[in-house]
Length: 187
Image (cartoon, rainbow, N blue to C red):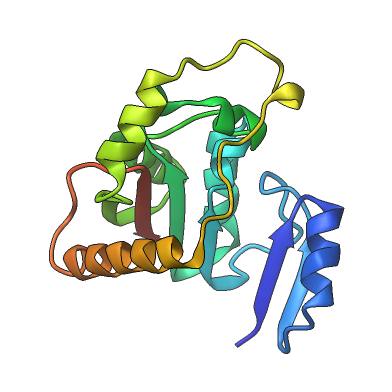
């Protein structure tokens, strides 16, 4: 089938276009005003996007609108507002979610939630301790800086192994907490 990538940023569209992925069409648009007919897609995904806009309910409704009946939506969002940090300001995250928040928003948009789970659980204790120790600065987002930096390849390999263990766990159970909330819903 056809794959369509959407981003609000012209720079992101330019970068994606330079990759020349066969069978992938790109569109510059906002998640709150998708330029597609109702029921256009079998699968819609959104990874850490809804959290960056003010109209969360409208975004969930748009995902539902462009999904065909019986189609599925998969969304990843950052979890737990107490974990807000300067990184959130720098990357324009306006809200962090709980599993209940996500389920309510999805159901209001006419979706049937099939699964809501946490992800990035094994790294949660370390990340939460660091985030909770730092105060969210009161500076404007334009002055905020992310604390994420490129890591040595050995550390990246180790983190990949941690995520592979977590994937194995998620195939068997819902994890009780994590840095992210992931949900799958059906229209």
